[in-house]
Length: 349
Image (tube, rainbow, N blue to C red):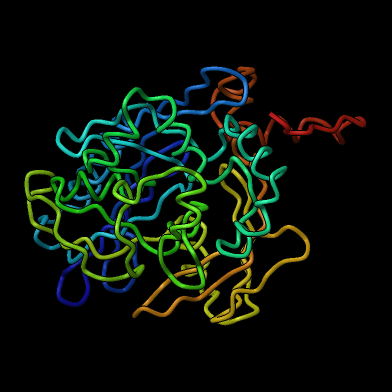
């Protein structure tokens, strides 16, 4: 290993799998570990994950990556987290147990609430403050649903007994042994609750969705020392030092660091982000205005276009239809015919 022998551990918590990658000082990959987890579809339009399984799978691959690299946990200089963004978890601050399965970003159960808010004329206000559209995609209406449907949840939230978070917050809570309830500006900007211009939770939007402020995490830079991992998990008190939503992290990682630079990522879904620098540019074509990252208290912004079903189609072909045994098989299968014969797949699942 180069330099002083220290590594960075990246935790990539995605929609269909948890992954850990260990990098050395030169950016070379020392080890990778990955584990898929279950997808739950309780009824049409609903998508859920077991938040406990997400935590256990992410911890397992972190341990595996360190073991594969043959390094001591003390050689890991810091842990960074990138995560599926809008997926929503509500948990008990005392036990650390989720009160309900995580509601995944793809979930559409809050469409009626979004339609009602839109009909009441609130969308322009939400968009002006958050850069987002009134859509079930985002975390705020998912949290509202949990507070409405889990018995006693809103009252417990007001008493400070419950914590809400996107997956970054859920993982940091557990990694820190329950000491940290934090997120970064890139994830906060995907909630419908965060004013991207002022850089704070918006009291008017919280009131409109009837969400107690006491349930929210504190919002920080995308890179700073938030605290340390509990040594019982990985064998050392490793600094927890980075958070970014997966698409913003990809934009930074692909070096789209200047205004006008853009990336497109093909994963579970497909996402285009265009760096707009220090200016939060409003879209006239229903793109999202979002925080790209926040460093040293300074926010950079991006415009985003999202396609929900990308790689998830391949997983459906494998797990739903059973026409391939593994995801990589789709390429050979597609190559067996000269064209589609006029068939078009519209992934409106």
